[in-house]
Image (cartoon, rainbow, N blue to C red; front, side, top):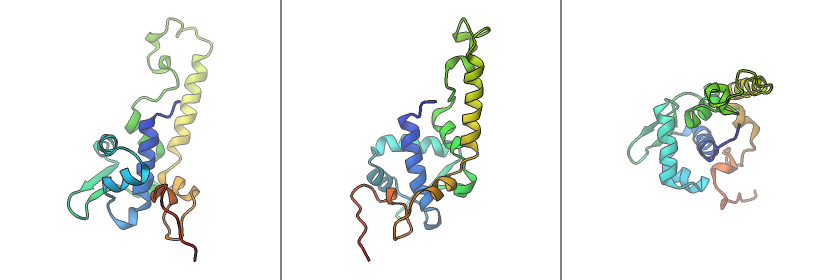
Length: 155
């Protein structure tokens, strides 16, 4: 399974939004700035997540994007599949007609099994699980939610 740029950027955006779950919507401009992702490309990514019901948006001065459920209720698989669709390791797993050897291939069963194991792993791992693995700053937020130029001041 190759993790695409769309998935990497989407997970970064989702983590920033999840990190602000209790604080309200996050403007696209803030995500674009801190994650160093083009706003135009980010709009495509969050639009896709919104169409899949993972994100919602609010317009206005205090507007932005927010999770439709708690971070614990959103699996990484849900995010990955919303952004990438079919994510099999090799094409013949989903589309055996693409390979003349599919019916008697010695490795197709391995790719199928490995694909199921990876899917199970991503389904069992939530945004909250990922947030819990990351260090927080003195303000209680993830350092990656501040961007590269943010330096914490010592106490």
